[in-house]
Image (cartoon, rainbow over all chains, first blue to last red; front, side, top):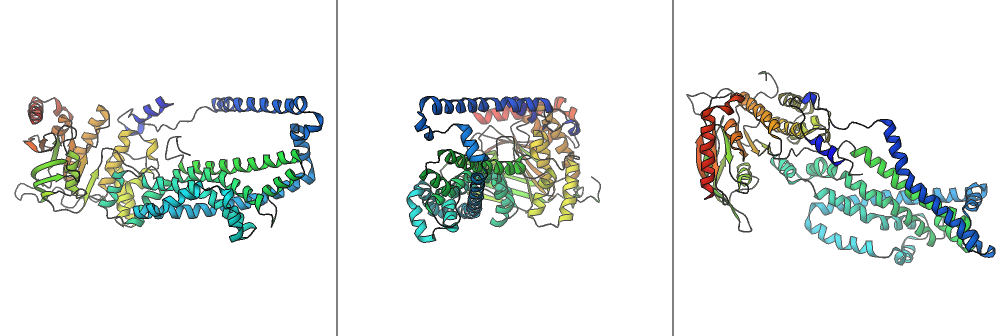
Length: 292
Length: 264
């Protein structure tokens, strides 16, 4: 691949018309093959993992202790195929999705604004940054009770947890993107008397877009975790997946616990993937495949 | 290159022998010492007039780029004076420094956009500049999809859009292969012949300097001083074969010796 990239840099001919741009797609068949080949290792591991769970469930655990690790088909039957349970979990999933997306949206706007402010002056960066770090390293569980006291126990409190847990990657990545613009480009803007707003809108922000998406992708996963952690503690309002997990735990319904867990993981992966997909749409024409 | 084109320069071709062309920039004993105490440039004096193409050659790190930043006002002199008689400067860097998130068309429009020109006008300017550098058909391509030489063409086109009377070129073709570089030299000369701007061209290729310029300044290693000045007598437009002319070779070897002397 690196060889391809290098040869693309070279000028093949003096006539620009002959210089065909490099992004030539590979033939469809070899792409499909490549896709399967990439999929094989994780699938193989999945098979191994499911097999191990069966072994542990049937061979290692005695029948009366089997509830500790239910065999996968029971998780599927009770958690995913049973109408009542499935409905319960899907409702919770929807609730968690709303909380985490709201949190992510707020973190995106707020984090972006903080990063823009920090990029404008060193003193602003220096005044904000330590607290951003402190916020990041504070165990979220430790401050959840405080959040409950300040914001109540329902939707808004959960959203606050999401924002707190997911804002840091957005701030740092956006800031990085805003501050790593080529100095020559800044000079060019200086020569044309461009002020801060023009510089920000036409140079720094678009330059930061790939970094913003890197941050958003990390934050998307974190926001789902935030929503579930929040629900775990705030037992009012509509129950989300976190609340459900706690209930299943209390009733030792490990099969349902596992399926609810699958839903939470699925939600995290989906957000991560969708954000990555949107980011790639933005940047696919701009950079080689290293971003997004 | 027709006269009614948006990129038509005012006063292009008006340079005659009777009236000396106007001064564009003047260095008077200009020097630059950086805050950390490094002396990059010492006591440089020269005058550049409209229609002159000045090449500056010198070893790496001799302060050539600093000299250019002084000329542009981006990195002002710390001693002596640099007097600019023009506001509008076309700066071309060693890297194409295109915005990766803009198409060629939008990249070339950038400066006109920063200067606040109306959309229709900057479109016409960009289209004309793109045509002049031979990038027609690539308007909607992103820089990623271009070769190094084509990116440099786009960079030159971008600088052309503001019709600058002074071009500052900081080793613009230094990162390109020999063949592309030769082709772009010829095109730059073609542009110079038709627009007759003034240019300061930094390079460490002697043959590039002699081929393009009307005058060559040779700089010493840091702190950069002007060691010698060489007039290049060949009339414009210069054919590519000039590079194999004995007179060309003779002048090149003189400059080469001056460079070596500056090292001692």
